[in-house]
Amino acid sequence: MNTPSRTALVTGASSGFGRAIAHRLLNEGWRVIITGRRHERLATLAAEFPEHCHAACFDIRDSAAIDTALAQLPDAFTHIDLLVNNAGLALGTAPAQEADLDQWRQMIDTNITGLVTLTHALLPRLVASRGLIVNISSIAALYPYPGGNVYGGSKAFVSQFSLGLRSDLHGTGVRVTSIEPGMAETEFTLVRTGGNQAASDALYAGVQPIRAEDIAEQVSWLANLPAHLNINRIETMPVNQSFAGFQVHREG
Image (cartoon, rainbow, N blue to C red):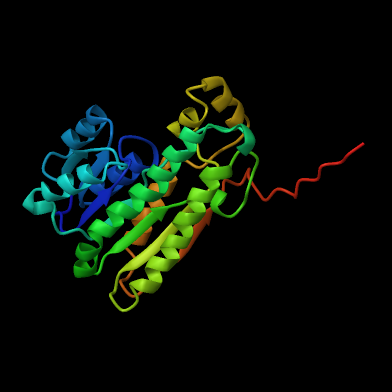
C-alpha cells in the first residue's frame, strides 16, 4: 500500500456506496474518515486499516454530533482533501397523497439538511486544501417516477446545490461533482421497502444493476484527475435501464 498523503471523509460508510467508496480509497493509500450510525460496521472496516481509517459514529441529522466528531479528529486526519457526501435514504413508495409525513421529514433532514450542515463545516478545510467535493445524488433528481416525491425532490436539491457550490467556490481551486446513479442494488432498496426482501428481489429480477463498486470506481477516478479539471456531473444507468415515456391517464 502507498504511504497515505491525502485524507477523505465519507459519510454513510457503514454499507452500500459509502462502504465501497471508503474501501476503495483506503486500498489506494488514502487516510479515510468513515461516518455512519452503525458503530459495529464502522469499527469492522476501521480495524482492517488501523492506521489509515478513523471511524466517527454519528447521525448526519445531528448537527451537534457533527461538530463534536470534527473537533475530535486525530491530528493525522484534520487536513481534508476529499468530502464524499453519500449518506442518504429513500423511505416509502406510496404516492404523495398517501405518504407518511414523518418519512418525508426524515429524508429532508438526512438528504438535505445533514448534507449541507457537514459541507458548511468542512468548507474552510476544503478551500485550504484546494480539495474535491463529491455529492451522491440520483437520476431521481431529473426523472420523476411514481412514489419518488420527496426523495426525488431531495436529490434535485443535491444536484442543484452542487452547481451552486461550484459557482461560489470559483477561484478557490475546489472541485465539485454530482454523481447521479440509476438503478443500483444495495441495502438502499431494503430500507425503502421496510425490509421487504421479496419486493427488493422483484425490482432487480432479470436486471444487472449498478453495484456499489461501480460508484466507488467513479469516485476514485474523480479523485485522481488533474487538479485543473472539474467534472460537473456523472449520470450513470445500468444498460438494462433507460428513459421511460410520459404517463398518460385515459378516462372512459
